[in-house]
Every structure is written in C-alpha cells, then in structure tokens.
Image (tube, rainbow, N blue to C red; front, side):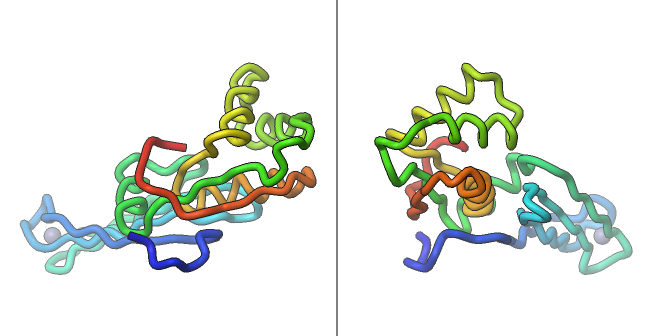
Length: 151
Ligand SMILES: [Zn+2]
C-alpha cells in the first residue's frame, strides 16, 4: 500500500524483471510514466544483465496495460475528484475533450464520474488530468485510492 505521501506525481517508475528471451539471463525492464510538456508519456528500457540484449521504447498517451498494472501494484492508485460539486461542468468538459479527444457524450460521463465517485488511475495519469483541469480553473482533489478499475 502507498505510504501516505503525496500522490500528485509527475513521474513514477517501476522495475520489472523477467527471463531474457535470448540467453535466459535476467532481464530488467525499467518502466514508467511521466508528464512531458503537459502530455502523458510512458517508457520502457530493457536491459539483459547477462548479455547484449537491450532496447528502449517510449510512447505518448496511456501506457501499456502491463506498465500501468506494475505501477499500480508498486505505488498504488490515485483518485481524482472535483473539489467543488456545485461548480459548472463546462470547463471540465472542455478540459476533457481537449486532453483526451473525447466525444461530448463520453466527456459528460467522465465528468459525472469526477463529480461523484472520482476517477482512479496511476498517480501520473491522475496528475496529468488534474493539470488539464486546473488549466481551466477547475479545482480538484487527489487522494490515494484502492486498486480498483482503470482510469
Ligand atoms: Zn540475455
């Protein structure tokens, strides 16, 4: 479980080990999510401890599920909620549609979730969404969450 520290993280990493497909040695994969110029990104750097097998992979947007699950297991999840339940949802919808290119219908559902149960994801996913909302002057709260569901 996460140690009561802040969950508003801009970067979060986890090390995964498995067997190297080339030589059977120990393969270490340094995986993580981070925010770069307001965009959610992810990266995996793999390195065999016993041979030359090494690679690096990065991408924009949501991380591969394996990386997300490893981060959630290692660091716990975060929950994002709107701080003011009576606030207008218009800026919330604007932020969601800009950041995630959601249809209006989908953005409305996400906004309703944010207002009620909150949205659960990795700390970095939640921090990224929180940034976008704050840019629209929406006040939000982030709290540690149990491992449930996805963002
Ligand atoms: Zn190897």
